[in-house]
Image (cartoon, rainbow, N blue to C red; front, side, top):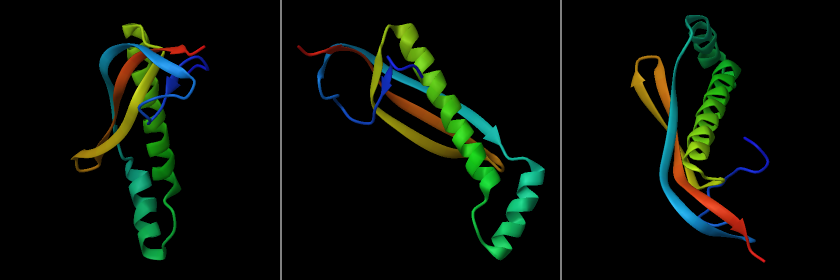
Length: 111
């Protein structure tokens, strides 16, 4: 996501005003677990601790969804997404969707 493009969870950005609201923008990715990671996770459930393979998988999934969101918003002519939210849903056994959405806007710096 470039330096000139903002994705924020807030409804406004200090020092900027919304010049134009372009509308809802969303993006997602669906990821499935790997059987090898499931076996490691089963052992972690017995002894406890963080399941780092899943942490990494979810982090990569969030980044992919965010990149897609920015690409879509930029194609709409936006330079920011306000009110960004992330959501996760289990679609099937071993598969989950990461959804990110917000409002695509054009911001301009206040003088």
